[in-house]
Length: 339
Image (cartoon, rainbow, N blue to C red):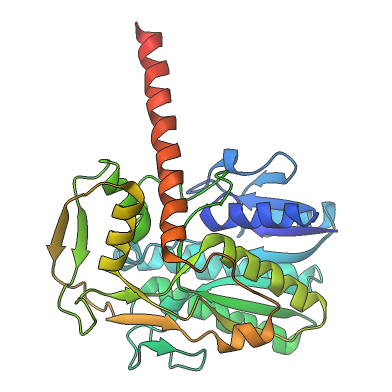
């Protein structure tokens, strides 16, 4: 019996693979490597290069490896990019997820964990949102994920099939043992960008909006350590295997940190300063967005272990330093060959 991880060579998916392998699960990774890295998948996991929308391939994987559950991470996830290419996001996220769900149903998969997002809420009337807060996504990315939630709900209503959609807030940090982390060079995650600025890899950190109605004028978000996030996925699998019904759950810590608090935490971790560039607010960005976590804590056997902003930024910085050293070593090897 195996668990299929789509997007398992990406940032969050690769951490999930490590989590499940630590729990002695058999894991199959399906990833097209458009943003993921083959090296991030441990050799003891089965790796298949391919697309989640390829129904024949997914069918073969399920049958060949006796897959009994699917954890679906594969998606495009950059909000500004989704505004430039909405049809690409609806195709890659929504249409391909539809194909994956159809295949899962045909093959009798009963347990499905979906990587959703707090972007389904859009701009809200309250800083702290529950799962019942009205969903008004303002980007094709958020809309594409909300459509998938609806498809899963309809599938569960008509088949012997249960799912949990975890609405992530702001995922950050890296594996505490330093094995993997956020490795996409042009990633837009605030903590990663701040770490790159602290290492001189970016000329400055751009802050969008300093006049919000918050304690320091900058936006507030709920940051969750990636290792706690994947632990929530593992707890979700256990919940479904034990007969849990389909649910949608916010996945965050229930507390917010401002952009300037992130900046100060990274500066402290790096023990160096870096330049800030203030720009106007981005259209549609809420002043604050924080998860109400009452439901997830009641539903799952999940106890976060890394709920500390300074710890999150330290882990992220250590991984960024690792990537920087690797890049320098690669440059030195190439220079040596030329000489």
